Amino acid sequence: MRFILVFVLLISTNGFSQLKTYIIGKRGDTLNGTDMKGRKQGPWSVHVDDLRGERGYEEEGYYENDLKEGTWKRYSLEGVKIAEENYRWGKLNGKSQYFTYNGGLLREESWRAIDPAIGYDTVPVYDIKDPSKVINYVSVKNNGYAVKHGKWTYYDPAEGTIVTTEKYWMNKLQTGSGDLIADDDLKPIDISNGKSKSDTTAKKILTKPQAILDYEKKNAGKKKVRTRDGQTGY
Image 1: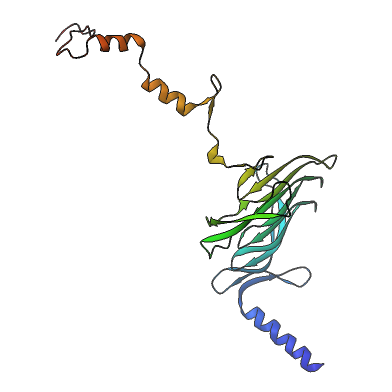
Image 2 (image 1 turned 60 degrees about the horizontal axis):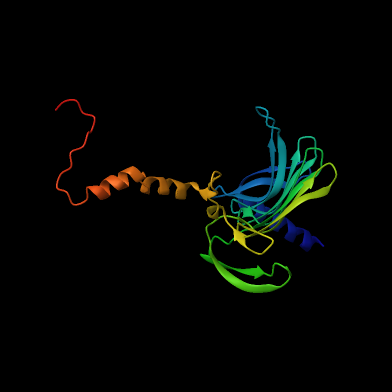
């Protein structure tokens, strides 16, 4: 028994020696530690006071090499949980939930983080009619951030019922027919004729009034055509 106690003590002492700074929590646990390189490590607890109309909160979770990792929970200063997020490589990954300050569920989000150490990631494509069936695999470029991926659900926080749902595939909204819509695919629409503004503008620039077209046709091939230009002097 004495050997076991000494062994545990050595592990604890070694753990503390790896941290440059830390605090001891109310329950005697080590919190808010930074290593010799100044990177956040281990369990962290953050307290933010009310400021300029913004409500304060408390947040707790785990850091690994200065990046959020695993489950992070956020509470109001009154102790009500207002958010629960999951992280990987410091980016949102998996399911996140957000609540009102009264505890009602607002929405559930689904994210995918890509390992920043790799340039590309292979992502499965699921059948729109059978989400459990993989119909293809696609290689996507790693842009270094989390993307919307999966089902997003919005709730009526008072009733607890679902208001609407959305489904994303690598930041693209998936329609009921299986089509994918990205932000870059959406263009401003000219409501007068249903065409994009860019198409309308280009058409206005290229199209000349009929009177000018008739004039140019009548005088085509002539060396010089005298015209009135509005000038009153030389």
